Length: 244
Image 1 (cartoon, rainbow, N blue to C red):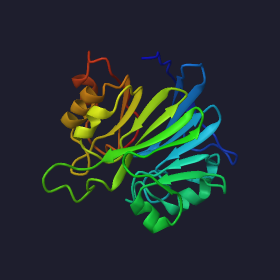
Image 2: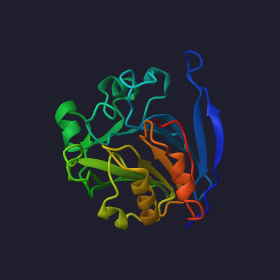
Image 3: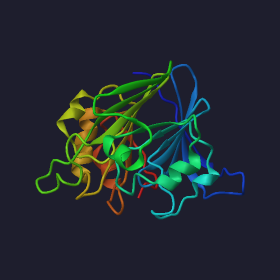
Image 4: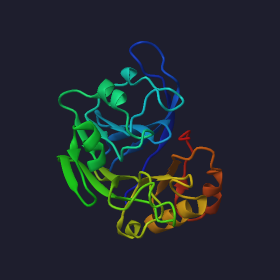
């Protein structure tokens, strides 16, 4: 697998003044193009690839800290994993969309929003020659918790940018389908029961997927530092950002 170059900066970007300082991780694709990933909060992130602006599960004022998406660049691509309010926020979407924005959603979000292209588990779209998006399963398996994220409803996404493969798992546990997810450079895995994974489940998922870099996210008060300890020596680098 290709080498990833990563560096860390602080973002302070807005036309109206300085929005809250946010951690930005920078990576380089196989042909030397820059990819930046900005931690916004919880399940929300901003990805920029060679000038293409990508927003994942943008949520504004409902979830602390409040985020004013009017201070962000307009999005070329918006990915929504599912319809829960810590992932799907109409107002945030309206603040960053344009008539040309490609919005990818699951069927349940489309039922509420009546906008976007529906992607079902297994679907793949080629946004550009060097950008593809694949929808993958995301669901609960623990008995008594299946109703939170039933099998077949929600999406995770694999975003491939000039060969750099980013897995955004969505709300899921360590499901059997993860064995089919290959050659991941960067993985975002959720860690908070009862809704997603325990620390041990995240560690198991990482051992199955074998990403080069793992960002625990959607973790609330889970002690995610334990993930780094448990994956020491595994070949996966764990980076902790403020995705509470």
